[in-house]
Image 1 (cartoon, rainbow, N blue to C red):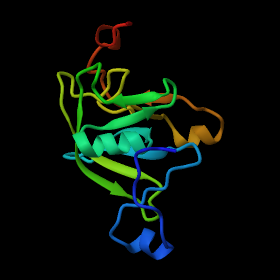
Image 2 (image 1 turned 90 degrees about the horizontal axis):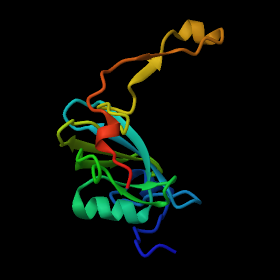
Image 3 (image 1 turned 180 degrees about the vertical axis):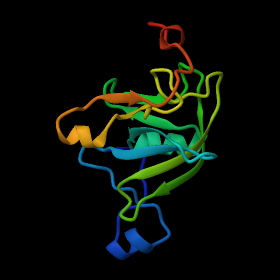
Length: 154
């Protein structure tokens, strides 16, 4: 049981049309979170939050996620210096997805651990070709930093 408690989920009407945040964490204790640039609207990344990371995000106004691979909290920018300052938090109609709008700071102004502004730096090259089994990706952005120089092994 988490020590970070958000309001209990009540009626469908209150969840969908009410004025209280009642996040729906999944059976694994996680809620999906989409992160968007507050100025441009560009989707920067997708990650998960648990109750603790959501509470930490709200308290510090620095985007904090739950790392499923490392099984620990992850404050965006703690290693790279590319911090996401939360300017707005939204939830979808049934409150099972979060959207945070952030102002990115740091030398590279990048969100992706691969050195790009956004984690969504590739697109399917050709939708028609994909229908025929050609799944090639095309890069849509330039790398802003070299991850090997930013993320040093500890």
